[in-house]
Amino acid sequence: MPGGAARASPAPSDPRRTLRGVAQPWDYHRPAVMACRCGARWSSLFAAHCASCHETFASVEGFEEHQPDGSCVPPRSVGLRFDHGYWCRGGERSPNAARTATVQDALFDDQ
Image (cartoon, rainbow, N blue to C red; front, side):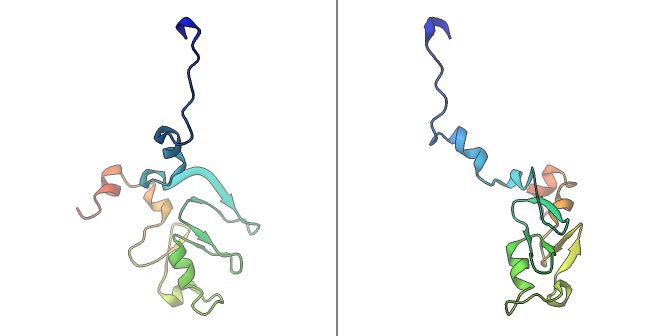
């Protein structure tokens, strides 16, 4: 920099620095991929994968519904539907299906 002054990097509390680490709606699909020993892979921050039956759910709520008494039951038997690799609850969309939606569709679902 002119005059020999060094540019300071953003402080840890600076919103420009911390915003990237917070799950924002546009961050629903991050490039990081999680994987299980069963071979399943997923990238949604909100997905849950069962280490017992190795099914992948679009949300933690869907995961919890498939274990009503603490043991796994078939996801379809508790009203979940399979969509693009994820078990989804009633109004949920698969994170993989959301990738194909336009930004306007994602922001204005009621239209």
